[in-house]
Amino acid sequence: MKNLIFLFIIGATFAACERKTSASSTENNPFPQGKWIDLTYTIDSTTLYWPNNATGFEHIVDFQGITPKGFYYTSYKMCTPEHGGTHIDAPIHFAEGKWTVDEIPLSQTTGEGVVIDVSQKALQNRDYQITSEDILNWEKEHGKIPTDAIVFFKTGYGKFYPNRKEYFGTDLKGEAAIPQLHFPGIAPEAAQWIVDHRKIKAFGLDVASMDYGQSTDFKTHQIMLGHQIPGFENVAHLDQLPTKGFYVVALPMKIGKGSGAPLRLAAFVKS
Ligand SMILES: [Zn+2]
Image 1: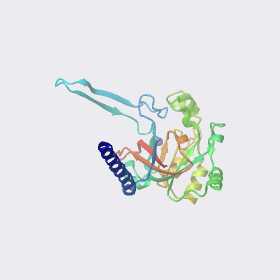
Image 2 (image 1 turned 180 degrees about the horizontal axis):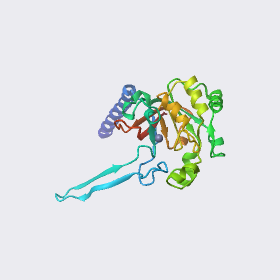
Image 3 (image 1 turned 90 degrees about the vertical axis):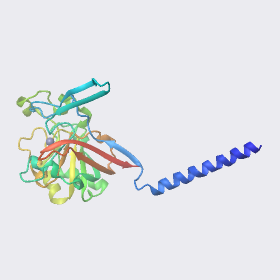
Image 4 (image 1 turned 30 degrees about the vertical axis):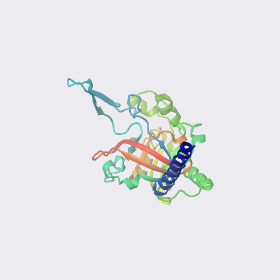
């Protein structure tokens, strides 16, 4: 009996401590609870690059295995075009004198995000160009795009990645592939409307380019990047995001004078 009372006291003390710990850890935790959504494709031999890029991602073994001193060691070198897989277009890519990738402030690539879903139209038409009307229709339902938002456009083409033929509309490579590119993008008219009427920090989409595949003048690139608005291309897993109410963190590799860079892109969704 004595033992039982003792166990009861110990048990009650533990329970009290546990309550105290969980209550204080919630009170002291400055960060909200939630989950991270990874919006980044792994960079490897399957990574899609623009069809006329001479090379893709090269990952070359420098050493892999047991060293003469008996411990395991592995190290590679890598070579990659800037624009492939999930990546950022720095403003300098199409706008002389604008930010290079190392010059883009962190405040520009972090912030509140929204998703504008145009997949119903885009999946029916490989040459679909997102219009200002699509944006206004979205706003009618979800409210005005918040000032300084990071805007994602969901075309639905992410589900094809990394199948080259389905994603690009052709599995040709080299210059011959360029006229055969068929995938949706943002109409220059919509880009102009955004810079004229809304203030956004950055934007992204789940295709290989912000201009549609058939573009030859890359006008949307010129407009958006010309206004110091970086773009994220080949964004992964947009189908896992809510329409709004999430926080975006986009961290490009800080390449000096880079016109773009591999990007680690993620979103935090509060629970
Ligand atoms: Zn790019």
